[in-house]
Length: 266
Image (tube, rainbow, N blue to C red; front, side):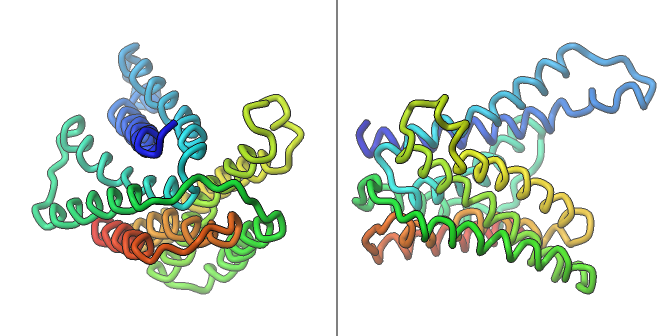
């Protein structure tokens, strides 16, 4: 697969993820229909189920893209979710797009394109020690913040737990890369690999921590910190885990993605 094809493969996967979120949001009413004394509509169940399926096939596209793109690029492309979600919310849910957000959508699109097309091949090196260090950093941070958040205000809770959830969620790309390099397409062998369970742990932990952050923190603090670290942490960790050469233009692109995520989320 060429670099351009891999870039659009990852981009399409993120579009499917955003479409899945939007479908679940649109048809989520069936889950509480009985409690409201309403009849469960088959169309709502089908629509919600399609959304669930789309959300869970997205990692396949990331895996394919990792064959030609470095993990930091695949992680950065994940920032496109916020654009797709905004546009799909407008088209499917009737939510308005604030004119103030349009410049940041443009900045995000430009930064994503720039990050993706700065020449950098898929990684073929993998430092096991660096991988585990990069995994334990957000894990330890999340545990500390969960305990410390009891003594924090809503703003601090949102930033700390949102950041922890974002870093763990972003690290899933590196766990997927570890599986690709160590086991290839022999998917049955994945079940005996610790990397698969790191992938699952990060996904579940990120989801649960985000729910705590939503409950106890401010959304205006949770969203930008979550999405920012979702892109930024794996983008930085990749340079140590995969021994990729540092490309200054890509750092500017990552900064543009992170900045636009923050400004689109508040």
